[in-house]
Length: 380
Image 1 (cartoon, one colour):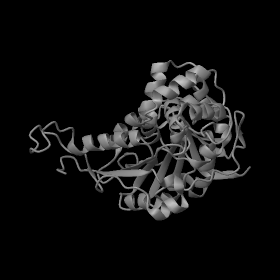
Image 2 (cartoon, rainbow, N blue to C red):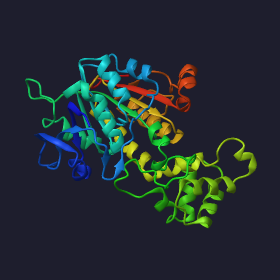
Image 3 (cartoon, rainbow, N blue to C red):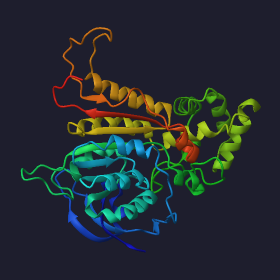
Image 4 (cartoon, rainbow, N blue to C red):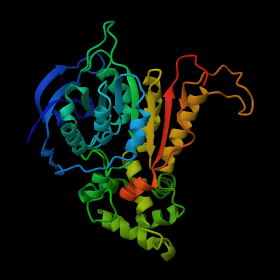
């Protein structure tokens, strides 16, 4: 077990007691009237967390790394918040590329947090790791930057400015490849799917208690599966279901042979359940609104989506900010007084290149959208 320099980890109140057991040296109190439980800690890389075995490595190839670096290359000096830190691939690359940037990384997966803490250790106090869901982004910013954080204020007492926010959504390769996490239909394991296995409802608990209409809606909305009703009926008829292998077989047997020939039919079902178990779309809606409000002028928000529902949500949020909530007919000049908050940085969304997909097939479904924060009163 190696000590990780001075990389600091900020624990969200919900996880503070669990993660406090990993602490080796208390660094500074982050107490405030609103968030008395927050603490900074120097951590060592744990071999286990509350009985969870740490993977020996957290190998994950960062998607669209070159594009992300390019988009953040011209932001002002300040803090970039990586809301889905994972193994810290994007975060480490940003810190290497820009010596005037700091990174505040958020993740709720203790395995990812351990890997990220180790990877970011060489950057010392330029990197802070936060154990939290990203829908608590507003709280993280308030507690971690607004005068109580690890970084000094300027001569006027102002906290560091947020110049970039990154979301790399979905599930990471290490999570998929570890059968014990229950994300994959390719191995038989407990049907879990929680990003943070220390609490919350598992996928097994969800499908064994949900009713037919709710499960159908879940599969249709999160998995965009036209056979949602048929699959939902098969799942309810086979309950109780305990493992990924059981669920994958039930789904496979419930669909026509032609569907099975086009790829594993459980892919959409597993995706839909994972999104529901982790409340991913609900969190994203909250976090996007906070993110766009937190950026300083010239700051950028970049989102990598792998699910059309996520991408539509990002597109709508960005579009509303680009128009300032304008209610005028699209073909007429704005007369309602709406003021644009951001401007888009490229037309539409960007997919991965053929070269990247060739070396990282999981990049095939990615869609990247990015906007820049405008000066107040600026007309986009």
